Length: 324
Image 1 (cartoon, rainbow, N blue to C red):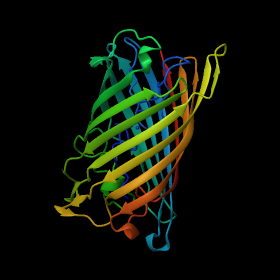
Image 2 (cartoon, rainbow, N blue to C red):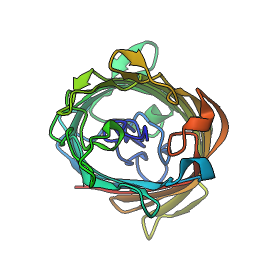
Image 3 (cartoon, helix red, strand yellow):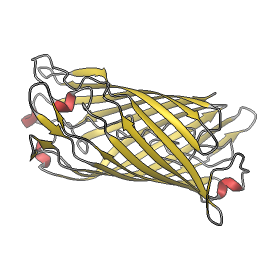
């Protein structure tokens, strides 16, 4: 089951790594630009402020007779903390927990995975490119805003985790054994006073690792391109509450895994997902919920990829964050 991507790295919905998107501050007040549920947006944290972040990504898989015991579901939970170093640079750290559960008779895996760290550089375009300044008016926030994301996992999880039968399955390990690196770019623009569009692209690269049982694995490269629209549908200024419906279209390309120097069958391919959801803002808190399904797949040896990206019945994504 190739579902071991560095979920921690790109979790931005205002600031997603794989599995998927930093946390959801996303709006500059009740009248500012919106943010996606899972894809990336370009908002950096205010200088001197901290962000506490919580995210759950639950993937329920399609099952097939030929794959018994099937992978039933995978649940990725994450805790994160961000800090606004200055007006244009934010730093983040994330601690993820993975649960990969199979049907009766299968082998489950649960545990804390690799910690990840990320830096976000924010800039804007206004008669040229500029780093995000200390203070911006609502008019300034109507400009194109961008951010550059640089991140890495740290090999803190147990890559040599053994399942109940004593075997090591790299796809169910709690770590990659070596750092995995990510590079991302986001762009955000309010199209009207209520509608915001966000784009993000990212690449994630893994290193080869030799496990305690002698097998070698290098997970395939991951490339993503996402588009999201958020609409400020309801605002209650007195209660300091805002709700935005969100629609996202996400493209994921997975390279083929390499096992012992040879390309692994039943790995890699491309998937397009749609996500429908919403984001609510209340005071200094933000909550997001999304329902995500694959609408197009082109997987290598698709009939061997049960329990992989593109083989979900659905994914449910929830996140909560607070700025303080």
